[in-house]
Figure 1 (tube, rainbow, N blue to C red):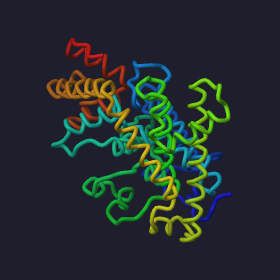
Figure 2 (figure 1 turned 90 degrees about the vertical axis):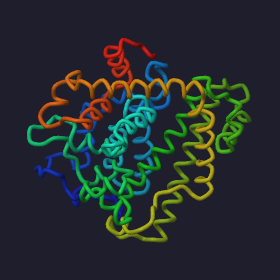
Figure 3 (figure 1 turned 90 degrees about the horizontal axis):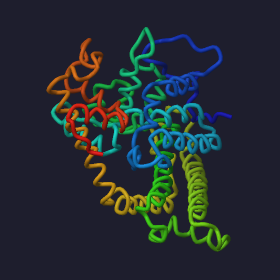
Figure 4 (figure 1 turned 180 degrees about the horizontal axis):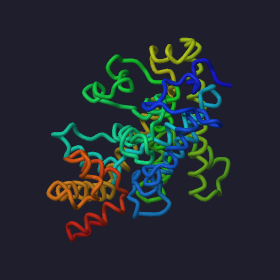
Length: 370
């Protein structure tokens, strides 16, 4: 049952290019299907989350991360009466604009584009679905509904918002996106905190005992050990993370229900005028922030991670310089037909997988950095 404050595809603000309705699918189902069939979505399987693609087959990638966000988002949306198809579409599309080599690649590309408005992967995700995908004869991009596009655009500077039209308006007038968009933003955080713990221990960069420094994780780990003292460590960790995820999901449901009971929005328009309603409780927010600080200090800034991401930055910078010197090193459709200049170079590099960027860098420079 759809709640009155949920997004209703029958009342969507529509697409940039009008299209007839599909006979068997609502607008948000159609958006999800277009995303899944896109080139950018397939590339996520070879794009870094924390560990580079060549470092192991069992670590999360942008694709598996997006799937986990979608699963968490749909589970919560169903209980709250939000539109599950919209949540899934936003979750699957939110990282389409991510560069190779994770945030390191984004930082390097942002440096290269400093004089041309910079580069931000979240804005690039919108650019992918609005312009860069080339699948349809009548328009560029995927022509998704406003509600999906709004949810994909989580962050935006005022300068960029001014040129984005209606989808960027909330960054100028201080309003909020739909509850489905708010939910995907929080599900993203829940997912990456949990799977980065798992990948960090699996990689050996985090010690199992180190997790006792984080109360949110430690209490589940010790509870599992009390109940199953002979359980192998990897299964203890899996069960601890499962319990943590479960409690966070129920915390979001309870906190959001409480906020909805206070504000009582009658429709999506009222949601936009209110504070963020999909949230953790204050206690869980504090614990989640503590976990993020732990991961930043002990995993994301681990010397081994820093070493590989610095190489990734070097690959991106040197690829950019090579294409700027001779754009014909890129495929012709990236420098012809009006898509010339530095933004076209950024688009091309941002679309690369980790392994393609490494191979292309070796082709252009004769050096292998990985």
